[in-house]
Image 1 (cartoon, rainbow, N blue to C red):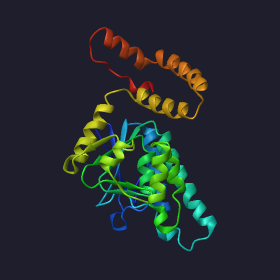
Image 2 (image 1 turned 30 degrees about the vertical axis):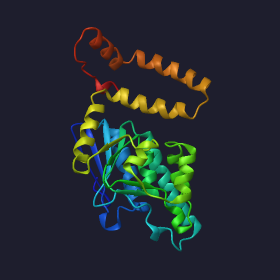
Image 3 (image 1 turned 120 degrees about the vertical axis):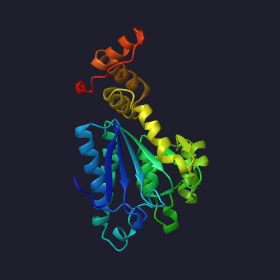
Image 4 (image 1 turned 90 degrees about the horizontal axis):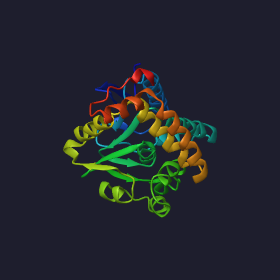
Length: 261
């Protein structure tokens, strides 16, 4: 599929999804979000990639939503924009691939939301910045709060909202938003290497790990254990878990049957 606002390619079982609106600081228009949704759904259906790296072209990762699609628009039109945004975030969570946000520059407002909604985040040590900056415009970052509040402690999320501050990669790592920090010069290379490390497992294991994590996180402890034991039982008889255990016991490298996913 040809895209206007994003780029997508796959290499060595890794998908590379690039926000490609550098002149607009990779602002998320409704059309851009629709392309991201279509791309993720198509990649999920083919499932050739095990990991998807989401990154931005130009100097910024993403400067948030395109303000021209909010300013002086009727509430119904703004609601449609954010309905598309919610659908995009759901597509990220629903994708069977592990989705890594590779943040090399500023990720603010909806850009911070987009990064926080991914499964993992890598950040450039020198120039990556994260913030929920809505209060600068007297416009609360309501949708970013959903993903960010599930990634960082409550008080820190409120601090991010109330101060509208941009936080460095080091700061974001300390409060749990960022997984790994790499030098800016090698961010793409190091993130790809980490993705390849994750992709050593089977498609089934990666997809189930993601599904179980997000499902149980919204349950009570008792519900989570009941759900988890069923998932352990199902995984235990799957072809790839059987292969994995047998390979371990016989001290050999496993051969995954990803067609059985």
